[in-house]
Length: 285
Ligand SMILES: NC(=O)c1ccc[n+]([C@@H]2O[C@H](COP(=O)([O-])OP(=O)(O)OC[C@H]3O[C@@H](n4cnc5c(N)ncnc54)[C@H](O)[C@@H]3O)[C@@H](O)[C@H]2O)c1
Image 1 (cartoon, rainbow, N blue to C red):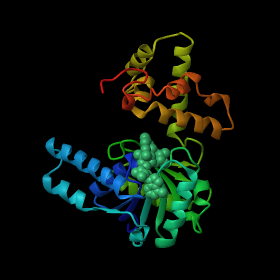
Image 2 (image 1 turned 30 degrees about the vertical axis):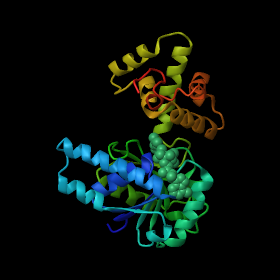
Image 3 (image 1 turned 90 degrees about the vertical axis):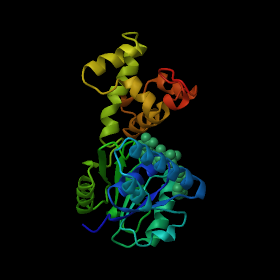
């Protein structure tokens, strides 16, 4: 398949850097775009460090590491993306920023190029309304860390051409991902099914039924790789809270998805999980 061989990843942060590393490792020429040199340099440094660790662990040869790096082309100018066949956007989670960026991208890329957003909580349909050709736009929702987590949600907006979404899902599968095709609904599939897991855990602790560590242990023993509280500490309590709010609001405040106030309090107090040294548990800096 031709489309998707030359990729652009917009945003060199946590997700963009991971997606670019994944694509370049899978053999795709990848342009990594950000608004400024500084985030690009930082993003590339993180990619280099991760690849070096793989080489040290003998999971990657030196030649392979060098060729992955050589396939990533950092750019700060949208016009450098004129010949890409697939664009994956992973910039800040703000509707207007994404819409403005896609409007600019559409002016530069070929009519047939695929356009995808990695948004977790915004509407793919709404982002796509800025485009003249919204049928080639979809969500490609990777999970953190994107170069490791196998799952990718391929999200069809109201105007997405199903043929394009299907081809994108096949492309992802060919590159080694587990692609799941979903509709553009709040939280898509994964963030939606995860809500009861997280929200009910807060209620159990809030009602005094069990301690957080007990809930985590019981769920681990039941077969989950991690319990809800230790998982939230890893994801970031703020990120998980934003997902809870998005699913709740996106479903017209359906009480099934109501977040727990304790979750907001943790965010307000700066207890964001591992990244802040404390969340549900405390961590050494
Ligand atoms: N972090 C996660 O766990 C996760 C998981 C899945 C999806 N997402 C989604 O991925 C996207 C990115 O999240 P992140 O955690 O990587 O954010 P981040 O803050 O780590 O990175 C965002 C990057 O976008 C850049 N940027 C901002 N405005 C830009 C613009 N106009 N043009 C180009 N670059 C711009 C920033 O300089 C930064 O490098 C969001 O939509 C988020 O919802 C995040």
